[in-house]
Length: 176
Image 1 (cartoon, rainbow, N blue to C red):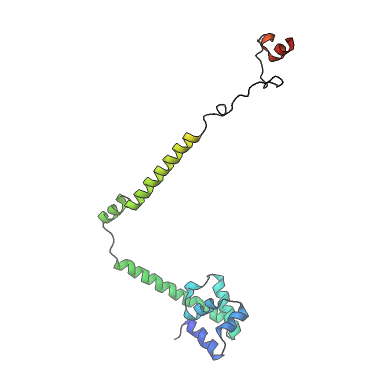
Image 2 (tube, rainbow, N blue to C red):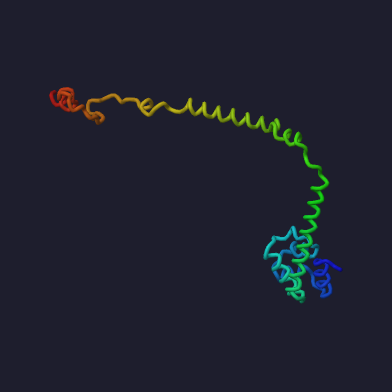
């Protein structure tokens, strides 16, 4: 009994059709068509695309598209079952870790991870120190007062309500 991919290839070769012809007519990438013929479904995009590729391939070659889609789905299920069985077998072969092995693996991070963590902490501390040193203590400490000139207007300031008129800048300038 031949596999799904072998059947596709056999039907195509019986009709003397190249994969390139199918690719050009269906606009399916040549890699995907080759993967179908090899039963290598891992290299296909997945989902409805795969069924669409099989359907288009079968139509172009002249075989029943729905029968080939069903054959594809069966082959895909067989592959998944084989992979699951292989995975289960690998789990059975590998002994379960002992409690001591589990505890040892969780005790301390590897040295490289500790070094990385120390480097990050030092870098953050240095950055914080640099920002603290460079950051101004307040906006008032940066502004230098300008000397008053004869025709300049003093900066607006609100005198206290109880202050005498003589201490106000307007009245002092008006008396001269």
